Image (cartoon, rainbow, N blue to C red; front, side, top):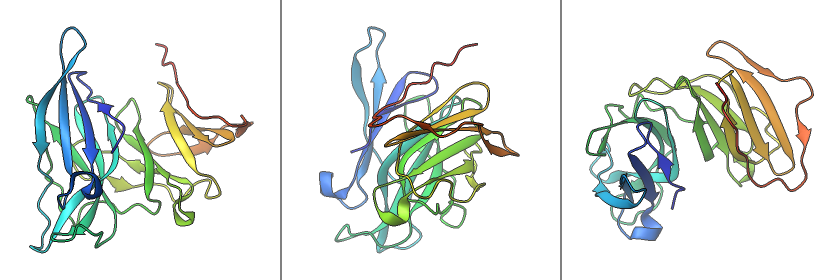
Length: 220
């Protein structure tokens, strides 16, 4: 199951569960609505995944989500066999638009969905909503991270190749000055990232043994 992510309007949270947890091919996505007193209620107990362009496969959420400031969601998905629920195709990342009731829909087609080089373990969208960081998971082919162009509800597009391919990344954080903070098991990497350039900051990475989490305070 994914960690919950909060929509840009601060009204809805989303979580995913894959086939192995919910028992139905395609998995599921749920929306939770934030009440005025801070409590949560189920808004959409089951948001259907977009149809796969083949009757014997379905899209399944891959338990990694990210939101932008203008009510869009990036979601990693994988094709699965419609009967067995086993993975049956390359991982893709699609962009979804959130509606007033918390429902998610996408106009992205399979041909338009970006295929990351690393399989995402974490994802994060910049405060500008224009950049998506995709961090690799625990397998040897999924180390490092990539930067994608995020385009709201339009298809995500490739930007960088794999950066820091020797490291597993646990968490990302952004500030409002184009800085990306990428935390691995023992190091904090800092980059200045814009839609046209990616530069590692002088002195990066910084050694932080056994680092486990990251919080970035975005000052005005």
